[in-house]
Image (tube, rainbow, N blue to C red; front, side, top):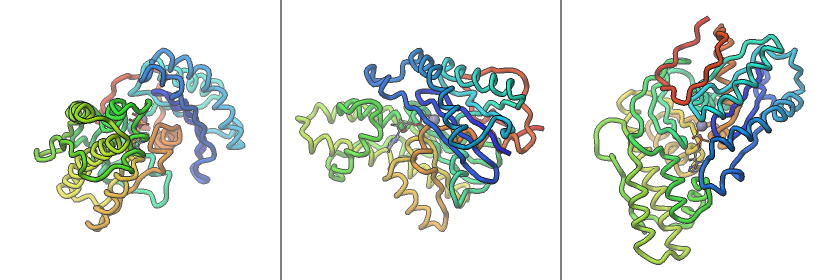
Length: 339
Ligand code: KG4
Ligand code: ZN
């Protein structure tokens, strides 16, 4: 089976072609960050208009890169939510039109299921069941992935997501949008312990997270002393250490309580080198294994949507004719594929 997949839930337009036997044949991505930087965040209407411009050329490029004609495809997958409604509709309308013209099934995929399944593109790949830490710009959650489509939420953030904590702190440090990766870069020059920041919820039971207090602490730290280069790096280091500490502590608690030996880390913040190194070390010390997507597949991409689409179509799921997209869509509402 070979399928084409389209991702357009936020500010990345992406298209991929995935083959069951040969693996990923092509993946194309257009990032809109330059478009939104001026406004310090994603402007939904601008995002939609850009998806309209970019998606079809990306489809052509992906098919060409994969040396694939529409006749060789068995399905089209697209992100159906959660995300920006206008942006989602661009991908959904294109995917369903192409599938209709090519007489193929079109399958709507949950964006977070895509993130969770992205490590299946790597080798070795995790198997079910496993524990997953999903850390993106919009979500921070610990999930037990029992089977394809069977996800049990252990806990999530009460307020800001981990990626948001990175981005908002970066903004306070004067770094351009989206600041997460740049804050991580700057943290490399910071001194450990020079700017201690709170670790919210660390001593509470359960698996919830809270990161909104961190930006207030960062604001106070920014104002407390003149911001020379070393001070900025120290604050960046403090932010990264606080977020990584909290994510690791909660995750390792869930590992201990559930007994899973496989941990998946997915979503944009999963590209963070410190987080990767720390979890790798801690899981190895416990005789477990941690699975990450390669950094480019931690952030939004269509390869992960292709994985979810391929697995569901292969399992016999036959989507209906509707073309709803959903801005909000709890992961726990997903079900295993139904023929
Ligand atoms: O998964 P993603 O691409 O988009 C959502 O679905 O939200 O995640 C984007 C988030 C942003 O907040 C970005 O700052 C963060 O991931 N991010 C990072 C790094 N790379 C991306 N945060 C920390 N360190 C990084 N290296
Ligand atoms: Zn995402």
